[in-house]
Image (tube, rainbow, N blue to C red; front, top):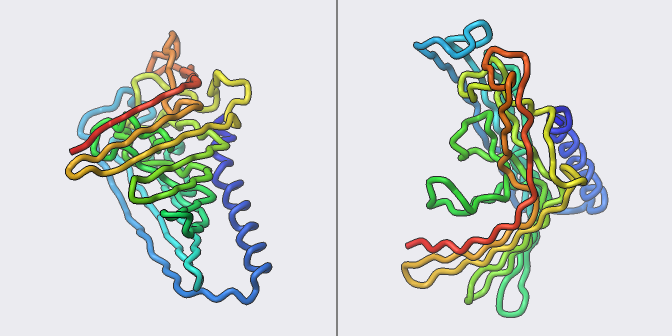
Length: 273
């Protein structure tokens, strides 16, 4: 499954670029009102004063580079497209060297009745429950565990995201056609579990595996100082169950535990002040 997960950015990039070419050819005379190219490039270094759990494979230091450009284009009608690729190189852990499409979507919007509608089609990142330290309701995107285990960094998620906003609140619907499994650090990674996790051997409860369609909906509104959010999710969990059985529990062993992903139905109604 790791091979499938690794091929995902390549496949989505090809699809996104092909769709862009088709749109440009179909609207050869389209006039762009604005465009912007931005991003970040950073060099990083880490040093660990203590020896790792597997000294024969783990280094005391590492260097890396991160490249994350962002392209935004908008036509005269206000419709736009956003592309945010991401690449990291890590000198110590080959698994942590990875790339992704954080965002690659088209944005359409208009008026409907008393409110406004918005459609995002492609890959995007959605943040729910940003005020919570554990983000218990934040289940749309898979976290990028290779970047940091705190769950703050997310992988791009293919989706159809429909929003309708009016005076009585915001209603959102999500169609998620593809599940992205969590990729764990390799043997050379320092911020990893004691036992290794084999991201190639992902086990799904659903027979459709990563192609099981997931659905989510959310209603949010503000009442003075209170913000409420009612959400429901039906699909494959983003967090895997790890069954650590010997010899997979041995940090110096050659075996690794397979991640198990279960189907879940979850509803939440948090309130923030």
